[in-house]
Length: 150
Image 1 (tube, rainbow, N blue to C red):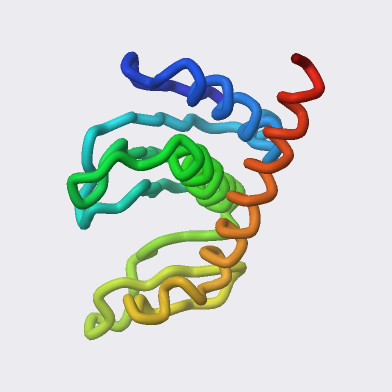
Image 2 (cartoon, rainbow, N blue to C red):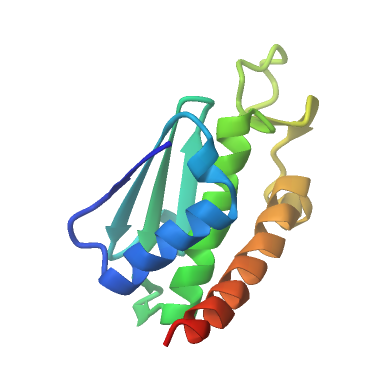
């Protein structure tokens, strides 16, 4: 897997990205991941990820609703979005793969099962639950491992 970071990515974030990529097994996959660090993202999101089996693009924000996003939340967001990148690159998650029902605007496929996009239920989708799990696991393991090498 090839990883591309924007030039303005802070050093602490670059170190965490490399750790998280290895932790999640992204280093064993083929494909490309591009990570861009931006001031704000659409809909005031902390992070966004989209992709397919060959490449993924991740955006990480530094501000939301005019306030700075804490370092902890930025790193957890990185782990969350890298989890989505893993899901895309492995084919576990596919977004909007040409829905055959034209009345459905957005469809995701999780492990072969179609899911219609429903904003109110998004946080309960299996790919989001997995990403939330790993955002915390990777972050806290990183803190423990980092302390071991001081």
